[in-house]
Length: 358
Image (cartoon, rainbow, N blue to C red; front, side):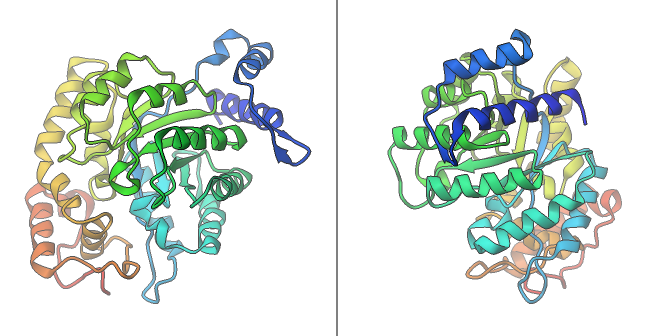
């Protein structure tokens, strides 16, 4: 375990001890906490560790009967580790988390954490329908040994901006592990402005911001605020956030396409420290645009999971009411795989006979 991770977990334990008294959450004095951190670790300890590179939002593989395929998870973890992925998000929106039962969510955490080798960070989607339930999922993930938790605004309720900002802060106060915030307006109908994100970045337990806003200009406004957090974005080519973020000093991408093109997403997600990094990102981005557009050609994870099943990766059926893409749609994805040489690179079987319905 590296020093950064040891420090992060030690800091999280102090945070948790300061904000939990007599078994219940108490108000969180952030100025006091910063003083405590300096006392325990010194002034240099105030800088947070940065998650960097390709942070892949994994699908949740399913068996034919619709149950979670844990051996499939093991295969996917090995695939990602062997291709350079820095971290995986388990049970994000790509992982069909909204259609998993609470018991399944806890089981996925408990079983997959046993597969952790230390080569890649394991973060878990812990958003619940309320603040209390989100804290419950985050606390459970921390108890089991997760590296961190990603949370979005609770879906459906469309709460005001101030309420959602306070929600993120309250969860971060209570969490025993680092938190990543996911600004995901297409899913939750709440779009945080850069001022709220910069405020959240001041919290010592919030390490990551994943941006999925349609307002590209927000990227520059956030970076200009010099927040002490990892700045990442989704890889949707329609939103077009990746190149602006990486050019302005972003730390990587929290992506869905890495389920199919992990090495390419590592290149795209490498922070720019030289001209070579910038040119490599440019070439990988332009060279894989067809695949990037394909993975976002249906609501996630429909297109990516359908294509994964077709090329022989463990995927299985989608949870109803989601259905696999139509045969002609799948054929386009297989053609892209063929054009990119992914069958030779990753050993994919380009067979239109396999589908996510199997």
